[in-house]
Image (cartoon, rainbow, N blue to C red; front, side):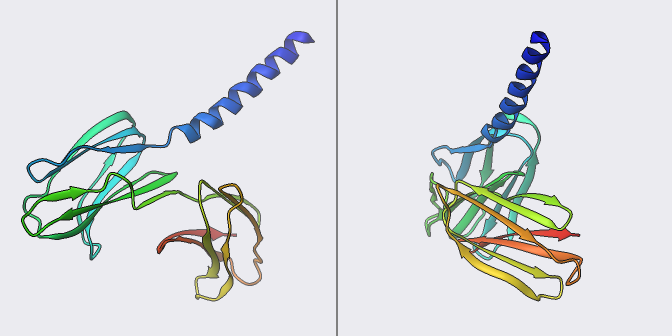
Length: 196
């Protein structure tokens, strides 16, 4: 009986540590000094990370997907780009980071080492028509729920408590079979289609 109890404690500990390590596995980016109009950076914990580089009109210039690697070094040649603001975005299943890169009128590249946006993506748990929304490491966000015909059922600015937001919605399948839950932070919107 004692060995069964010990085994269940060990299994419980393993499951608990796996869920903690999944959160600890979020990627991070380190921007290097910019030389010769080339943007150099390293992505750590690069597990299924997509990289996008686009201009201020949101026209994509570079994009690529990085598989499962501990770290990867990247460099983008920016010498052919015109003066203006550009953005480097890294996105995984759990997180988005967005960095501002400016090319001045002389062609010099300046990259901000602190992201203009760092956001852990919303997590959803769906059971029948009950949807739970969880966000961590956030400030205030605006949450809205609508259907595919743009009928809005809910919209509210939600204040975090200790950096977390937990919400629960009971979606009515009589109103619609499909709902869109939108989470907005600083003009960036993350949509999730929920099908009942």
